[in-house]
Image (cartoon, rainbow, N blue to C red; front, side, top):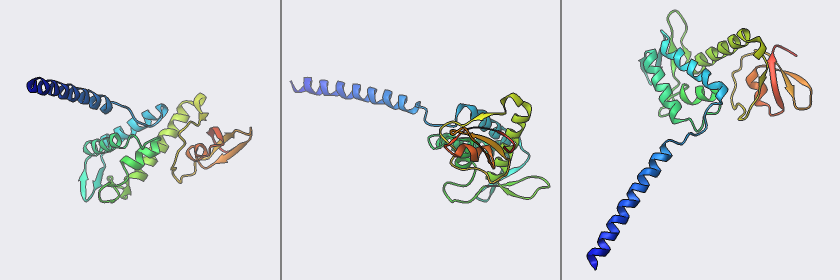
Length: 191
């Protein structure tokens, strides 16, 4: 009788172990929040930009060439995906500073002044967005979507925003326009 009970208990434990393994595997494949679909190309562009750059990124006192720096940024991106909701969030969480030491990442480019990696990537993002608008004039109206941006660059690239009350207003940038929940969409230039 005791052997029958022990055998039954062992079988139950093995089944529970298999079930737990399957649940863990399923959980590991759940996709969390990430940049909106229309911004995934921006993230890809920034990772490629770092990888193909002749600049070096200094993390915690050690210089890293483009490909290695890009891999590190991508690793942090994958770690923080549940926090990242915009391309600006991607830069903030993945390429700004060390999570452990709090030291800012710095970029050294030939014949240029050193700059924080965050500003370097925000500058490239702005260039990319300007180029997209220039190359796609029919797509010059951008519709704001949720989640709204939490941080924006301090650069002045004016846009004319359409608000929910059928008025327009000039904002310093598309990011600052979409950060305002009253804004529906925006186009390049002053109103």
